[in-house]
Length: 312
Image 1 (cartoon, rainbow, N blue to C red):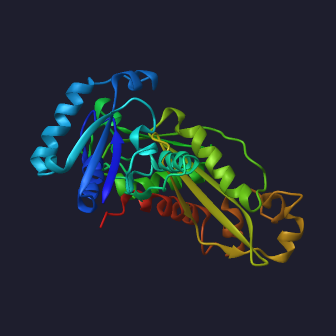
Image 2: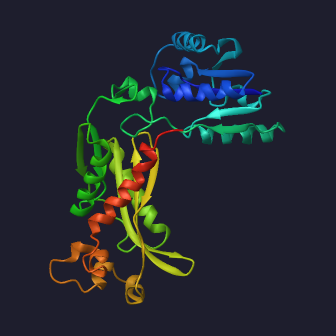
């Protein structure tokens, strides 16, 4: 099989190694594109010269015993030879998957056979964020190890959401230094269906602008097969824009709440005693058996699992 892949290859890390390993596992011939200095400049980046990056890659391929089957070419545009040459497959990461889809669109227009797209999962550093050359260059990580303190911003000023997020992150990252901050983000008062996930994502994206992680948590009512469930979603966006999702346990919304929920917020519908609004619907309806912080923490933990789960 004739396969291809591409990248900058400024620092050859474990993510590159996984891409290359898959390429040489399935490919008889592997074409590796390296971005030119001019293309890097057009992308608004700075880095090692093309010749230095090529030399480092050749040394790595030699060390792995892959060099004889490799062909290294320069990439002066976003698509390179993959858009027109005779390849069978392209190896990509989740970050470059969309580019591979674009390449196949170009090939279709040229009446060329589409490439088989083989997507390799991200390789995470110990902080749950994908390893990248830019992160190594900026001194955030060394290999997989986190060097700088981890900054987590929560898209809410709600103390329950803040405390739940802190407890969830400390479950997995207690061995490293973390800094937590919160920012107020306005979303719909009573989200329904898709608005719940959209609200969580909006909160996370605003929070991550000046952080390593942005955390967005949103609760609402979602219809599932004619039944209305009260659900809470968590979106976690990291500085590379990689997004993971989690959801808390859900329960069927009582009819007396559902009838009024499209006009009023949940906290205005439930007859809380004075000062008990922060218990939330779950606290009131479960008679204190489950707290709002409990289910919020579960949603954050669920959103962190894809980041800490080991690769096979």
